[in-house]
Amino acid sequence: MPARIEDYALIGDMQTAALVGRDGSVDWLCLPRFDSPAVFAGLLGTDEHGFWRLGPGGDTAAPAVPADRRRYRGDSLILEQEWDTDGGTVRVVDFMPPRGTAAPQLIRIVEGVSGTVRMRSALRMRFSYGRVVPWVRRVEEGGQSRTVAVAGPDSVWLDGEAETYGRDLTTYADFTVTAGERIAFALTWQASHLDAPKPPDAEGMLDATADFWHDWADQCTYQGPYREAVIRSLITLKGLTYAPTGGIVAAPTTSLPEDIGGERNWDYRYTWLRDAAITLSSLLRTGYRDEAKAWREWLLRAVAGDPENLQIMYGIAGERELTESSLDWLPGYEGSQPVRIGNGAAGQLQLDVYGEVVEALHLAHMTGLVRNDHAHQLQLRLIDYLEDHWQNPDEGIWEVRGPRRHFVHSKVMAWVAVDRTIKLLEQADEQGPLERWRALRDTIHADVCEHGYDPDRNTFTQSYGSAELDASLLLIPQVGFLPPDDKRVIGTIEAIQRELSTEDGFVLRYPTDGGVDGLPGDEGAFLACSFWLADALALIGRTDEARDLFERLLSIRNDLGLLAEEWDPRLKRQVGNFPQAFSHVPLIDTALRLTQPLGPESGDTTAP
Image 1 (tube, rainbow, N blue to C red):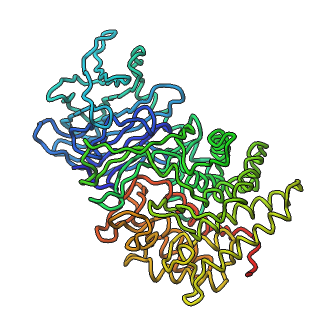
Image 2 (tube, one colour):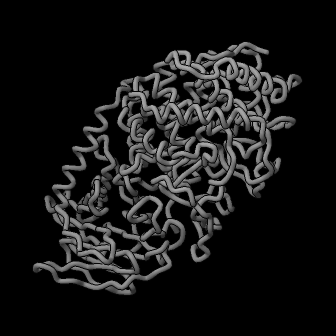
């Protein structure tokens, strides 16, 4: 059985990523891209679906044991795990060097710390998400023995300083390491029709990878009391960025369940405009302008000349076709089925995305990112579309698979899109239908306040005519739709805290028993929403309470500072895809708000 979700570590090269368990097992790796089929899919099944375990051992029957210690090397994605054994202490260093146009590589260096330790490498490659057993053979090249696995378009090459042998469709290496000795292994993907890749210089690549991450982390401008949590979240977000295009995946995994044993399992290896836009905001606020510029260029390529058909998500290179299907040969993480690839939500209408994208473009402009005329024209065309469609029902921020509704958050973010565009035109002294758009902004605002607010309970509701609450309403003061001291804002925050909070004080997205999402089962507390509550409490002056909630959220990160999508209050464990950008971004924002108050966007917040 795979480890708990939070027991995994992330390593990556900004084009793909691997999850490494405490037992030294790589149970998830897609090659060559985040959204490619996995060569190790044991995370969603069993060892039969692919893994690479490296740790103390030597006896086939001996169970893998968890490392006694693990950490990232400084501010990097270089993982170090250490085992204390009867014979001594050993360290395994795992990393994926940033590669540019080179082949993807996973490098593992075994280092003897003290004494002598017997080690075992067990490598079981399974292509196409664990379904295809490759042809594995040994190749002699320049006096060096290499192992290559080939299946269809893919080949994976194993280079190592220990002799390998095959048994039970698995490649093993048994060896000992003594104090001061270092033994390296490298796994390299290559298209099968190309010549063999060169064996890597593992030690040289380790030094280069450490230098890359050190230099990148040094650009962070945040120096507050939560720097450790902020910089780890920023590194995680950088690790989820597809470097060739600037696209940012929501998570490097698919189908890690929101409800263990249930069917709320989705593929997150794509770029959601919403997630990417809020990620852009966090990067800009912490000094990372190059990433912001790259995302803006990705956006322009993805949307191209068709903003009227804006999708909520795209492939990492801007692909539009993300057909959803199920992999019936995989039993799923802890029996959570189906295992899905692709995502059918790509075809949904989510009007809030227009607001998030425009807000991100507005922030880029306000923070001095060099103007891009194409981005400016895109923004104007998005408002043209909203002008005709903001009154339509949609699937909303949570991608419900039930009927479309008039979600309040969607309308609020449509207001944000119009408001920020008006500000852009005013500040830049540019031409545009300002009077018409000012009237539109007022109309949307009045509509939300009339139809999305319950005066008897003093709270905004999930959708027009609904009695349900929704955690996305916490964003109303943050985006400047109403000021924090408005009684309707305070009433909404208090209602959500009262009715959607778990016993841990964390926040559910919405009641799942109301049938709004069209899915059976339940889910955990959504971590982004819990950070939003901390933000909202800070905005209304309840700063001590906000800080307490924020620090409780920090306490449920794993020992490496990583967060999944949700927290299961019953099982006291993380659930959902991992690590999740949509959890790490609000962590950064809340840290900034508690130490460097951001304040809501100023807007026309006059009550109608």
